[in-house]
Structure formats: C-alpha cells, structure tokens
Length: 245
Image 1: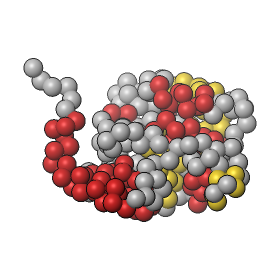
Image 2 (image 1 turned 60 degrees about the horizontal axis):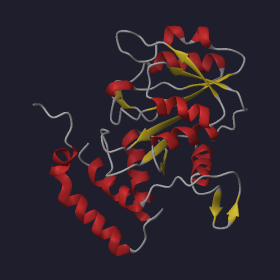
Image 3 (image 1 turned 60 degrees about the vertical axis):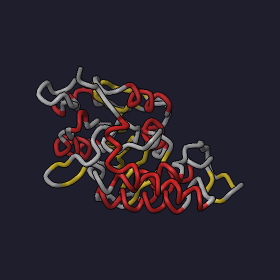
Image 4 (image 1 turned 45 degrees about the vertical axis):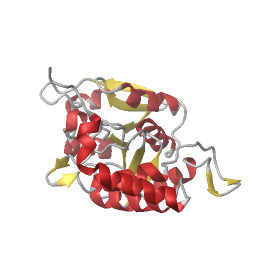
C-alpha cells in the first residue's frame, strides 16, 4: 500500500532543528507576537518578494482579514473560482460579501480569465484568484482585467508557497496574498497558522490591528477586531522549515 500522507516522515529531515527552535521559545517565556513572529514576517516577506507580511492564526482568517481590510460595503461581489476549497468562499461570506463563481480553464484547473469579465457587475470590488495544485493562476491576464475595472486582487496562495511566474514568486502579484501554513501545505506548521503578504503599508498595518482585537496599543481599540494571532512556537517552526522550502 502506498501511503497517502505521512507528516511525521516528511518532517524528519528538520525535526531536530524544530525541537531546538521550540525549546528556545519555551525558554524565552514569550509565546505570542514576539521576536519569532517579527522575524518570520520579515523572512517570509523577503522570500515572497513582498514589502510586508502579517502572521495570523490560519489561512481562512488570512483571507477574511484581507477582505475586511478594504472596508468593502455589505453585499459587494468578489469573483472567485468555482472549484476552489470551501475556505475561499467562506472568507467572502464571513466578510459580508457575495462570492461570484467563475468556471476554471480545463487545461490548468485555475480560474479562466476569459470568463471573468462576463461576471463583472456594478457591485464587483475584487477578484480572488486561487493558485491551485501548486500552479499559479494566469496573473498577467487577471491583473489587466483588474486594472481595466478598478478591482482589487486578493490572491489565495494556500497551495502555492514558492510557486513562480517568470521567476517571480506568488505573494507579490496582487494587492494582497493570503497563505495557509496548515501541516499538509508546502510550508506547514505543526498546527494551524497563516499569513498575508502585501506591498501596501497601510493595509498591512490594518491587518496587524485587526488580528489583535482591533488594538495597536493594549487596551486602546481602534476598530472591530479579532483574535487571529500567529504564536511564537509556530513562527519558530516556520522559520526553520522556510530555510528548506
């Protein structure tokens, strides 16, 4: 029998490095939003070729916070591939927006750019391409459409850490890109974790505030927020595994 998946085996090459990194966090006494998170955000942003990275609790919340950061009106429409994982759809609904489904290109199984324009209406605010099966969507065509209609691009790269188009990694093509670090991903933590990357300093700061109860300074809440923080242990593990990606 061929094993479908063996996470223990896949992590064996760097398990000792991970144990050492975890021990260092335990010894530090600081377990949430500390130096490991800051370092991982810097390193992952650099890896993706993006200006900023914000670590969050999981991939679904990365997508949801990315949408909320733009303050779209209730009922705004976001174009999304019909064959994506349910988390992509849930993030749109969680942000009080409406998913508009577009069929895939049968050659790539990614969203078909030629079918996007016919779904754009007066309430459309964004396109959410999903880089499925490790293969990037046709970003050049999608970027052209987004510019033509003044739409935001929110990429779902949960399955595509390290995937490239013309030597450029996903994570810096759209306005914002969302990643999951679920254990089965190309870059996986030992539990749930996620992140967003962007070149927009204002959007990055908004998400930093929203992930921590809407607060930039403790006990001063600037907006509606959430508990969606990347913890130190997962950040330390991701730093180790990023070096091997």
